[in-house]
Amino acid sequence: MPQTRGRQVSGDDLSVQDDLASFAGIQRVTSWLAPSSVESCELAGVAALQISYKEESKYHRDSTNARSALDRLRRLDGASDVRVRDFVRAFGSLFEPEDAVGVGYPAVHFHAEGGREAIAPYREIATLLSATLRLVSLIRRRRSVAVDDLRTVHNWLASNGLGADYTVKIATASCARLLANTVGSRVVFELSLRAVPVGVVNWWLQAKRVRPLLTWRDADRPAVRWTGGLWGLVGAQLMFAVRSGEKLAECDGCGGEVRHKRRPKSGQQTWCDSDECVRIRNREAKRRSRTASSHCARQPGYQ
Image (tube, rainbow, N blue to C red; front, side, top):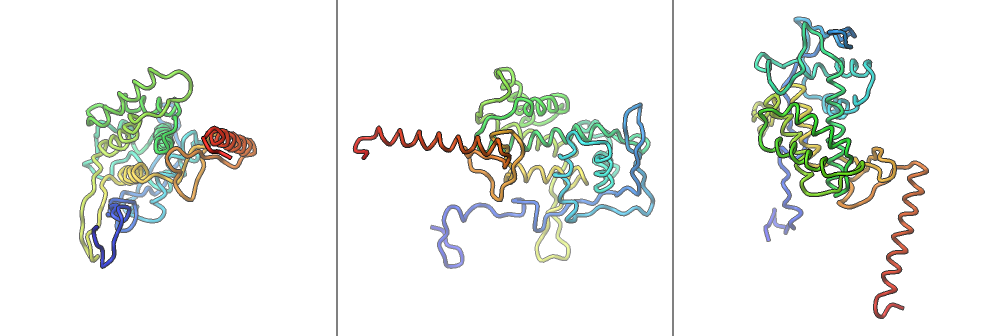
């Protein structure tokens, strides 16, 4: 048995607690330009944002506010134009490259034109992120997943995954096979579903070549710095959310989001606090209790 500072440790104590285990501690991100103003406008007849910068514009840097970028972005799924504008005001442009090297990445089809960005792509990205995080929550618990979420990921990767690596291609193929063989609104859990969120994360990181860099300045130990500006920040947060799991699950009654203090265990049902779902939860508990009692009664020697 390995020893750590004079005490025995179990296998659980040996889980890797490294700098890439979570987006905390000495994680950092590269800075990106903060707009001086963001106003509503039109671009080719669709709702857009006019994003302006000044020569003395400040740069977004790693901060408590920036660490909520993934959660704020995914909540733009179905959001109003005003909420999208407020996101860009708070975090900056998701599609504006952080430097000249970022121009022309083929996997990122959305670009600013004359300082204007269409609003719709932000909602499309938010829909992808929301679907991916719901899939992760259910796959971790070995539950069935929604056909709509699987279709969202498939449509995105099939149209944006050109030139991607094998993990993205496997995710796309897995989605296509499962969708083709499914009847109804749910897809029964199988291990191949794990490839789906992996493909989304790897596509995101490859789209702008997001990668960790090691830096060592004034601190006692090196720090990990992620490239890609806001896009890289969201990608790193998405990777950690998929790897470690959020304290988020889907209600087995109504399908709504439920936040827990701890992540639900594999196979564990979860319920929201609505009256209808509480009734369903209580009926399900009684059914399991009756089933267990009936099983015990059939056992030899049961009194």
